[in-house]
Image (tube, rainbow, N blue to C red; front, side):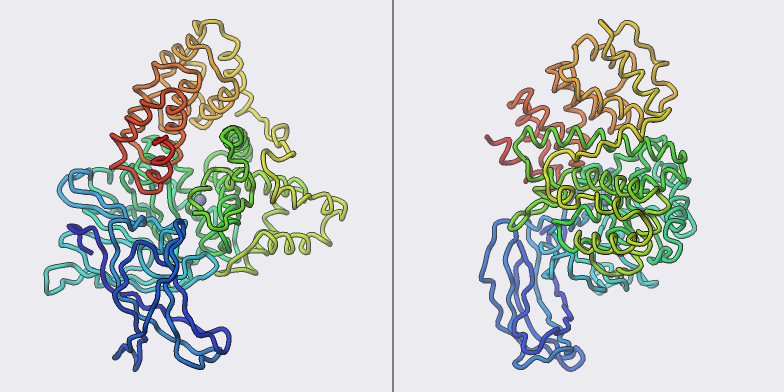
Length: 594
Ligand SMILES: [Zn+2]
């Protein structure tokens, strides 16, 4: 990799097995890559026979299909290794490059990749669909003294010195994974142990905070997840965490053996470690058993939300805490569904949106997460509880280990598994088609079964906020004993009562200091303020937009700010966009240009 040119160059060997006699073309996804040569690797890798390739189609969202002719008369079961020599370009959206001054340490450059959903094709030519899984080995060189990490097991000799002074790193992933889980990061990284099978990697600036934030929970979460899947266990060996700059567009990314997380979750009080619980669950839901297409993304994320909340109950607060988080998720589902419907994005409120020819990142929202989780909770209540539901999930996952699944496959398995276990009328009552394909909120409202002491004490504060004339009766004691997620819950409910009286908002900030709490709270509060046309919240909004790059915060706040004052939204976007990842820039460039 060359930082100066912002480019990876080299070659990728794709080893393919022929599934049918006579297949004559290999088609690979590419986008923003310069393809130099394509050849057939022969004689055990010693010679490469050139092949004429074509790049006939350019799709604005999907890129170019690289077509490579295979030798005449291919036979089922035969294997070929096709070598593609290429380089990435500045438009390769998978890679975010940071100049030294954009890093915490200011001395060295930094780069990391984010391939989900369909950005792997901008990093290397591949079958960039989650329905195809492969093992991989990776060898690359970066400038000394940078440290490289990747979504695989590092070679014990890493790094070795190249003749040109670069450092060479080797990694291997022996479990079959989809292309979107290939990940690399290079920077002035340091590491520290946070558990028997876990280390945290980050810039020196974040290291102490990261150790504090994660060392007390990581192993407990892994153990809790192993408890949910006793017959499967944790199959990936090590589990490390890389803490990335706040410009990372997600809270976390479940790259195998090396979760990427956003430094914004270093709240200093473990209040956002649910992100780590979430990514650990992906070691089963998504990474081991994978959605076959992005239309079924909810099979990755809805399941992971459901499992994350099971982990929170084991490690952090029992069944009541799980139910409260399910309730919190339902509140967010209501808020986001309302916003999407108001913005005309009806399709994206479906569990299985129509995505043909569409970049799945354009459909990204919390719908597959929370509507998916809501559906699984509905199924749990239908089959008689969590134990029964998890019994099915173990059976389903065991039957699909290292494979891919579809909604159809899930439904078939579910109906068969429970056919002799529960009342057939109950099974018949599940309206799969509506759950899978209807837009908007589901008819099932879980609220009444999720109310408990966590939500009841939150509801009291919500009532106080809504009933108050001027906020003079507010006191820090109102929320002093609250878990941060209870404050989030209050703000999600308040969001359904827009506009909120400006006096009340002023007092909320004065008494509870909501805009300086963790970013999950501050961004919710600022959103409520802007939607209520309360201009005093603009500086807090601008601060979040300047310090963060996670889509969940900045997309939401740009939408709020855009409605409040279009020119202000454009001004902030222009000032900050150099820091944002391409998926964030792409989402707003057009919208804010209007
Ligand atoms: Zn996830």
